Image (cartoon, rainbow, N blue to C red):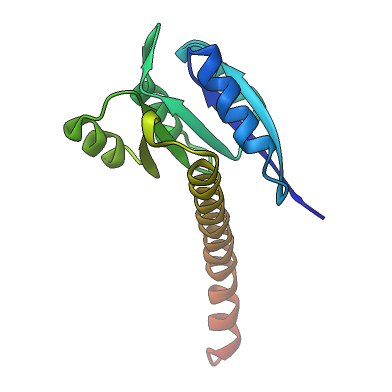
Length: 156
């Protein structure tokens, strides 16, 4: 049985979204539900309402920067911080560094994206996100268990 994941795809280019959607849906190892947005505002609304597992975000959007969406995701109080892959038509080292400092999992140049590279980066980011979520769950369990064990071993 295939794993099912929600992917938020935020890009103002219909053709780019179509290509990425086709690349992802051709991957038979995973069952992706693709949520699409053309603008920063639409992307923020889908992120808030749909709880995606990963976001693919274009840097340049008509109503702002993809970095703003990345910041909003990273500032959330939610325990689950979804992985974000930034994409851009032009490579700028300074912006790539800024995106990574804000928590982007990867920074891809659109000209270099192929079906296999996109699927590889998405799989890796999802796996990393799943591990981070599992680690958070284990840390919570440990916080609850340690006081109980301490109380059991302390003499009356």
